[in-house]
Length: 243
Image (cartoon, rainbow, N blue to C red; front, top):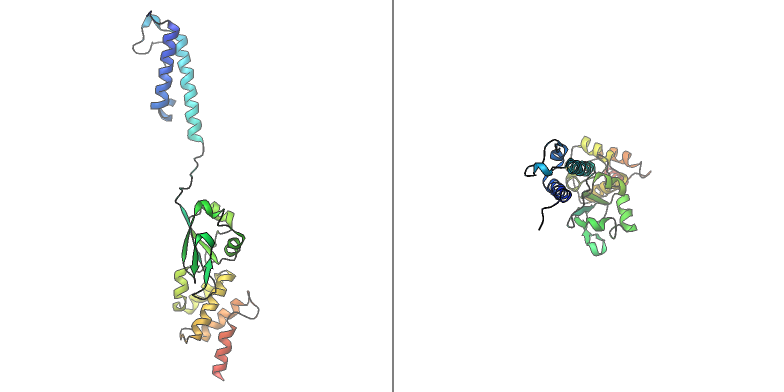
């Protein structure tokens, strides 16, 4: 075989330079990469040195710089993993043996149960009109699994103090009166109804932690949701006892 021509050698060198730059250089190294047009590349016969070939290499490296810079500047897209889930719980003024049926996604008995819904299904099969209503009324609560943007989109970006968490729902009767009143005032209407139901149930069972001094302020706050007041059954029974 004859000796390669200058054009063939230049093309081979340019191809090798482009391949090496694409596989071994990151943005920082490519940005500083240059080809000295005054000296031939290492191992390249000086008599066959072609400045035109070097210029072609410089153009290829410049194009590679641009590609890597554009890639670095492009916003990264984080995809949810297939096994990621959205955790939801149910809080409402229902009995402890009430069953919330959510079809193929399962069911929850009473309040405080946690159900995990695959992320890929949350905005699809899971988001039925019934579920949308529960989310809007703050009966079905999203605990985690959604980004801030997604919470805004689905109407579950809760305000501070708006919700009664499951731990608080079980120990709210142990709170000092001033803290219970402040907590109740900040709750959303649905969770205030839940609290009133819990108070009524506890009072009917003879719970001595429920006093008139606590119930009357809560009754006044609840009139924003029900003109008659949500604690009326307790106050009526207290009045009957005092006769």
